[in-house]
Image 1: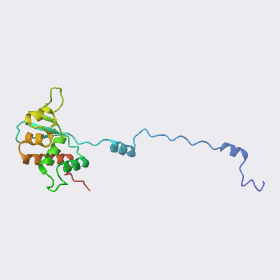
Image 2: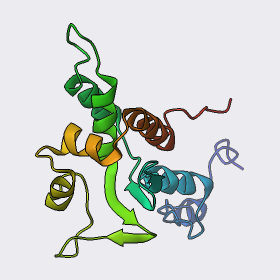
Image 3: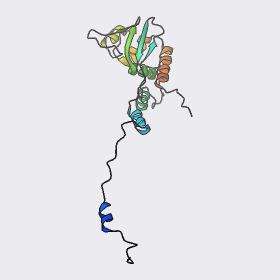
Image 4: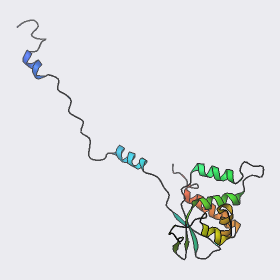
Length: 170
């Protein structure tokens, strides 16, 4: 036995251990927890449409989309005089909240549509005609409700439905 034989391998062993490429990574067909989280986060989050009764108008309710962004709130506050000397006009702000979130009108349980089949909102000519107003916000909204305190209550209900009064569990 030679001195190097203890520390060297036979040539046949070296050839058999030639480097082989690593097997390709097999993607798991089963969704793992990370993929499930990714799917959950990528889904669009939307609050469901809610119905809001108009208190002094029996049988009349509004279909409201309570998906309100912080940017929208900021714009509505600004349009309601928040940065002016007089300050925020709460009735005008309420009209913005109601007017911009209304996606339909319901009367006696049925959705009201115009002659072309479109749902009514406060910019619809039919609403402007029936309220005898020329501007959807604040005039048509205010005339539609008829009572100012109900405007504020309705706006608060919409903001609640949007999640602005939700508490976050810890």
